[in-house]
Length: 520
Image 1 (cartoon, helix red, strand yellow):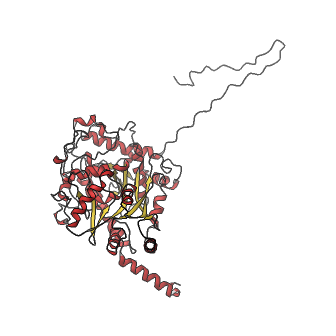
Image 2 (cartoon, rainbow, N blue to C red; image 1 turned 180 degrees about the vertical axis):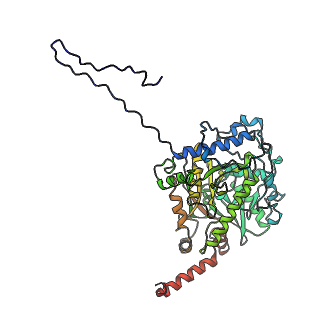
Image 3 (cartoon, one colour; image 1 turned 45 degrees about the vertical axis):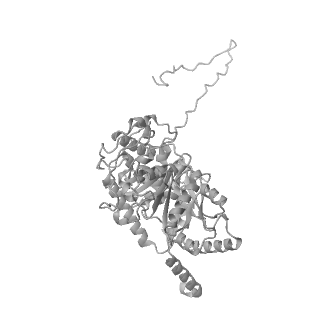
């Protein structure tokens, strides 16, 4: 029975006293109805994406403790990808029965402790990481490593390290200790160094006879000295120097105790999907309106999909997404007249068990954008990169993908989504350099970065309202002390800064100053 039908309606009466005088009848209190709770877009988007991943995990017989518990699955058909999307092989993944007994305190959607046969070919057979020869990579027709069907390892009773191949160990270490600087694990031009105990690893690239290590060592901080000593012995065979790019506070503390030179060159910008103002619609109204228009079947007709390779590889979808990435890279390189800094070339599917992908399809069912989320275990979160739209895609696709990534992580109760590097226009804190050298270094840095197109990255990050309490500093570290020319050139190459383009830009700027009338 409704609330209204349970109330008896009584005709109004006018009570009177014995003298015939009217008395005032107290007015009935009118209860104001509670305002309806605003149905925010991110709940619809997040629940839809979560339900897709949850259904995929059930399809592939993954036990529910390894998947996102989607308690409130609503019918949001307009967000789902078209039915023509190919299905997975249900036998491609299965979960051990002991998984439900996991003692892990952090529930995440994709567990890192899984094998990946496809990665094995990327590493050399010895302890010291993978071969640098690209010709040995078994590339598929789309130019990426085809994923094999593999079995998920349970959280407990893991096989001993002696029974795991190098690829499994590296994926496990990256899943546990990975940070934003380790995004280069998806770049095949980098190599890995695995210590003899297989308790830690370094991701590095050799430039100008200098091994540039990306970020911190993938291990516990108390093992930093041991793994770096092992790597030093290995480097002596090739007469390599060493430097670090993108080191965090953890390694910098170790570096300062060793009196190494450290230079703060950038910051990591981070979104909090649990409190983000854009997600909660407290700001960024233009993004919200744009997303609603794109997702409206009668307007944009865009649909969203989610894919976690840990629940079963989909080579057809991966080929589509890889095609988008290659097209986007080609267009970016063609349009880039200026030097591009901090650009990395990825193979987005090389560490499948660390990854979640969100993608968009147009009204015609063709994929036109995707975002890759890589697990960063050290921060108990994810790193968003790449987040791209295909050439010719509707305006706002990349914004929609970033928004959808936050919405999904909100459903997963994850409060850390890294946007990646943001280089500083001037150097921050510098230690371990003589004052005269520090002054010269600051001047050279400022002069160089004034000519790089890095302002757009900050503006793009700012519109999504990063959480300043989650931001952190990133450093260059030089164990040799004052960096020599060889070290500096190696860093320039690592940052993908074209010296030739910088010289051209400098010459063009100088000619404009000499002939100001030519600009009129």
